[in-house]
Every structure is written in structure tokens, then in C-alpha cells.
Image 1 (cartoon, rainbow, N blue to C red):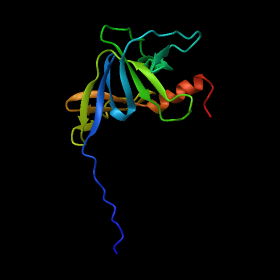
Image 2 (image 1 turned 180 degrees about the vertical axis):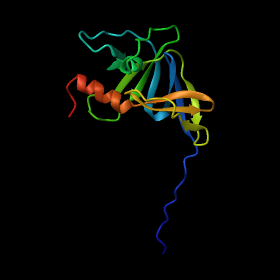
Image 3 (image 1 turned 180 degrees about the horizontal axis):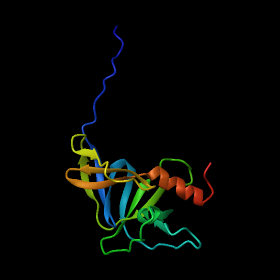
Image 4 (image 1 turned 90 degrees about the vertical axis):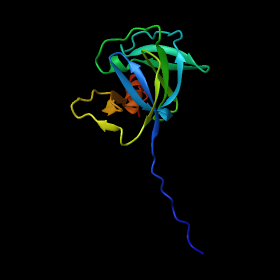
Length: 161
């Protein structure tokens, strides 16, 4: 009897979302995005950093709403008519923070990302919460560093271990 062989299948494409922000768009794999939801009430948090916009309710949970732009040293975005909350899965650094949300400036679009269509842009400097600048299918986008965003929030709460 022969030992079973491991079959390796190369991933052909990664289902992703292009998420419009103020002055840029994020490119995030679908597995990173738990849900895109309409803007709802935001409960401000007193004495919070400018990037922590407050808390919002999602599926009977309270989750923090962060500004990707402010975290990267830019102006705070406003809430536009087409704004949404993008609820992101965290990387599991702390069990009390399974999700964070960011404010979008429009409706995300589906993107089927293939290796042939995406390239790293070496002409752009990454800001603290940006993993990489890319060109995909003729469009520029930023891959967010969700782990760093999560870590910053946990540090703010003094839950970083």
C-alpha cells in the first residue's frame, strides 16, 4: 500500500474587496472583512485618541470604530451619504477584541485578485498602518495592516500583553 501523496493546489485568485476611503482605497481579502453595514449611531468615548471615533453596535456587540486615515496621520474623514462601516475580523491578539470597524467613504467593490494582476508599488512609502501599496488591474490600493491597528487599540486599552 502506497502512502498518500499530498496534493498542493496553487491558489488561482483571492476574493477581495476594494474599500473606498478618503483619498485612497483599501484592498482586503474577503476573509478579513466580516461585513459591510450601514452607518449607525456612534457612541463617542471621552478622552479617546482622535483615531478612535467611538463605539458602534453590530450584531448585538459593541465594537470600536477606528479611522484608518487618522491612524496614518491624515485628516478625519466625514460621514458621506454612501459611507458604511467595514467590520473587520481581528487577528486574535486578545479574546476581548474579535472585531474592529472602519469608516468607509462608499460601497466596496468585489475584486478577484490574481498573482498576474497585482504588483507592489515601490514608489510609495508605507504609513504605520499600511502593509503595502499595490497596483491591481490598473488601480492603486493599500493593503491595511489590521494587526497593527488591532495592537494600537489594545495598547490604548492597556490590554497589550
